[in-house]
Length: 409
Image (cartoon, rainbow, N blue to C red; front, top):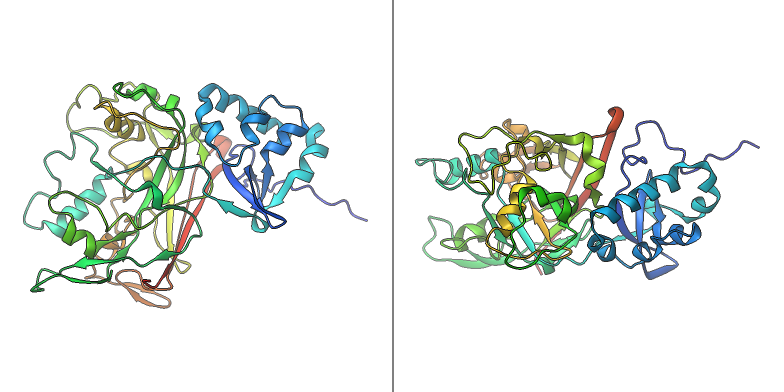
């Protein structure tokens, strides 16, 4: 009888190999209320708390939790040491007898929001996206506003409506008024959109009144995830003058179920973009070793058809600069804070991370196998995936974030 292979015997180049090990929270069908910290390895999830207990690890208390909060707040040294331990558990042959019974197929578990979202902030950090939006809505003016290249622009969102990948998105209703309409009307959004983003998860909080400098980025940010900031463009256009995004954004923000630790992305680090002029000192990242960009390759599909491949490497503002801007006024960080990059868009038409740009506000519909699209229709499923360069030519998979549009309630 042939010997069965182990779930730990992964195919060469598996994007969820030991070089990755993203964290999530899962439950099993036999214990649906028992949420546990898991680590993805290939197509399986390792019960991290149970593994720590079985191997007598000093990290058992951090990992035997219903979510990632304890690990997030433990700090950078603990993050490094736990990651080293996990790597050994899934690679050292002597541990297999203890580890293999604690592996669950990914498609046999339920994945949950992996941490309690404290505050949610969304930025506007892609020059290509901001330029496209400016050309669409201000065709006779400068595409970028005068402040755009001086500071990362952002807004405070609604943390309570951040949902895990796979959660249905109910089409939002609100006021809308087209330029030619005599008065506003109320009803379901007819310009429901996506925003392909990267989200950054804060681990260690900060004291109110003490800004976090660029060099403090890796002491506070644990890792990243994919993020889709669903947007009702018609509601947004009518409400946002003069303050900014409100109901057009706050109905749902989807995040992937996996949080990739920054340590898994060392090979994806790149230099920050060239600037047109020196930045103010608290944002100046020339020579800041810990504050560079990241080479992440995102793919966006609607009903299985890829419509865009936005490159995160083109982002003008880095995650460290966003964090510095978010705290420069003395605002504190809390464990579980989430901040998004804003829509990721590249220079080419096929690299635009929103339907607003891909269809040029509906004037250039997309041709999909199931019909044309300007904005999302009920029943549409949007799936975003991504990968980053890993060590020795590998790829680091960033999981996926998916959501299906259901009719307004």
